[in-house]
Image 1: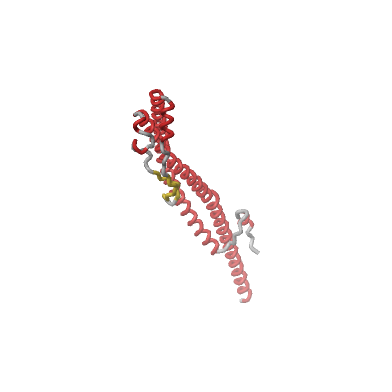
Image 2: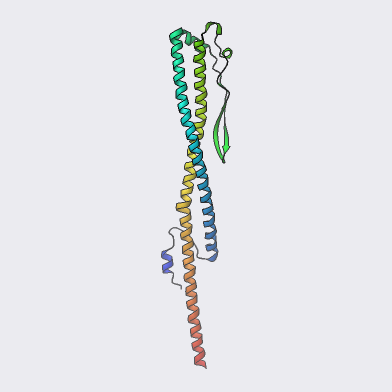
Length: 226
């Protein structure tokens, strides 16, 4: 029986590994594949982070644009209420046709499916808003145009925020897979490879020792016989 006490102490816990040449080659191949996967995930995460930073700037700018558009719309509404009275403004608002065509779908970028919102231009000509032009005032047109701008900015911002949220989810998923490879899978495979190699080297030393001892005994018997 061989004495593999030192090698057994180095064997990773909770693994089923046989110390053979084929297992050693298999572990080396798995390590190479795992390291390749790790490098690919690193590149993917870097690309996602770069896209995240660009899109985050767009979302921040969209938030500022929404704040400005909302301020302008509220100011236009205040002027209209002060000039025409809330009843006239409310009547024009009730007469407006709330038509907005939206199409929700997905787009694929870098192999990732992103939610996407397609919509027609919100701004409409005065003649297509629904209220009677002969009984309204330019203040009403300014209010309508301002709030159409607000809706347009909201839709653009919503689409960008959905893409940003999807990017965050994909970055988190990629990071978890990368960490699993880097801190769990590859170290375990490396430990398996080291244990198999240690056992095989110990076996070679034991076999060499047995061969030398056998040769010495054979030579000794030959000398006695002669």
